[in-house]
Length: 445
Image (cartoon, rainbow, N blue to C red):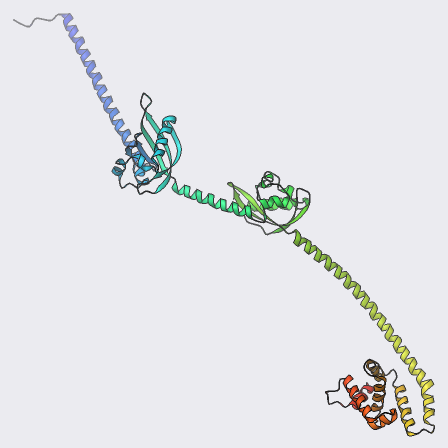
């Protein structure tokens, strides 16, 4: 028997069934292609993520809340000084904390905030060295809100921390140095004071250094110096070079003035370029200088007065000398006209030998009155006695000791005694000079 022929309706149903199967097959084929494309894209994405993960300079890791490390990148291995990635994976995060309680605090905080940014803490490297790290962490939670994994990104900030600590210590030392500096220090960002040390407060009469912060710098200086102070501040800030010390006057809060020597230099204060002024109180020195100048003025006035007095005295002495010369000429004229003629008449009379000698002595002395010898004798009057003067006159005329003794009616020993006294008073004791020759030389000067 042959195969029964299908009806038209059955054929149509079969055709529709075949079309349906073809459609489903095509859809499955398209779905398979899409799946393959998606799988390839996912593998590519995972590869990019893996490269990014491995090449990231920060230490990336994936860990459980209990501390087990599930994944980490080479930077993480290098930061904590692991020998390789496997050693890191065999370690737990808790061992990388100096205190395991710190890890529990970190996990609890992440559960609360879901994400931590710029979280700073101290970690311990594999070799035991403590380092300072900054970390960003993201919590991965399940549908029930329980923390399942921790994805972290951290970097070693130890060098910066050490540098900042050194900077803070240096700033603290510098601040302490300024605090205890005996000179007044004022720091200004232009014309506004941002810092003052205790000596600065004492200099201007403020109770505390904080009372000066925010005040105008120029208000502390005398109006005559405010323009120069402002110009020097701007110059230092622009050129960034210190200036030489200059004298200024500061007006204290009680309006009294203080002389200071001010040196200005640029300084970075609280991250801003400012001008630092060191003010040294030189009021005692200025007062001493002013007193010295006043003394110099007084001495100059006294010297001028002395010069005037000297000039007047010189004029007076010249007048006295001229008057003495006139008096001397008058005495000479009187002797020549009124005395010597009578003495000549006396010599013409009959005189014995002693009288003749005495007359010659009188004539010689009268002739030499107002002469240089007489003036020299005037100087001796403070040294020689009247008898010694008589002996000197007779010796000068060439009389011997016995003759002088006879004329003065004393013994020769007395005349010898007077001769020795005369030599001593004239400074001839220890010299070979002859007394008679010395007296004659003096009479001729």
